Amino acid sequence: MQTPWGECAAVDAHVHFFSRRFFEALASQARKSVEAIAAELGWELPPADPAELARRWAAELDAQGVASAALIASVPGDAASVRAAAAACPGRFLAYAMVNPLAESPEVIEGLDAVCFFPAMHQYFIHDARVVPFLEQAVARGALVFVHCGVLTVGARTKLGLPSPFDMRFSNPIELHGLALRHPRVRFIVPHFGAGYFREALMLAELCPNVYLDTSSSNSWMRFEHLELKTVFRWALDVAGPSRLLFGTDSSFFPRGWNRDIFEAQTRALLELGVGAGDAKLILGENLERLRTSAGARSV
Image 1 (cartoon, helix red, strand yellow):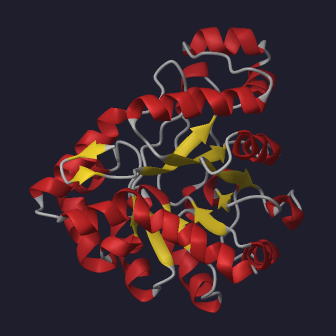
Image 2 (tube, rainbow, N blue to C red):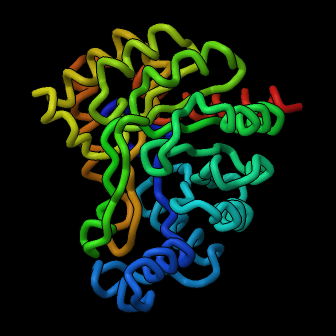
């Protein structure tokens, strides 16, 4: 991809893989057909075969010049979709999947590059003892651990008029502190700079060198703290450094596809801060590639 710093192998650390299973989950809750759900949202209904959706994403990334991406299965029980996507396009995608440790077995991690926890959605503290077996499996299998903190909204649910009974008591990054200290071999990723708990996410990153921040989404939480993106990047770089920031867009559905506006806003902020080519390339892709490689090496 062409960037302000020249050619760069961009890697998107945060793309939601809205499979047919995702649409079926929404349809079940809304008591409508998947076709009706897609029409109401104005989104393309994905093919039943996740490999076909993976090839759709591969073509989209080719068109945008993106080297690879982490695909997140965005409902519990859908890990098979991202495993199939990664298998359909070898070396192109990382397979991430949402899990609910209160209802699923740690064996779900098999074949995944990252396991994703959403404590506010499923209402548990990330330091709950039931999470630990998942961390042990993550280390054994070379997987990363993604923990969503802060404000959690699911736009599709809002548009469909579905309730979102999420509980923010469980979403503070500080809850991850003790766990990250006790499990130094686990590489934790906190998306959206903590999504409204920016100060707490920075404190966590300062105290735990195994915590990484992903930069994804429009970061609309900034309005709660009267921040602009350039300031967020400045503070994150000051605390976590360029080697622990992971570029992401939070892209999710078609026909919109990959959200280039997010990429342009983030690269503009980094350029205005005077970030050099070496550090920019770390953030835009090299950090996640190194994490992927080092995690795999630890599992051997």
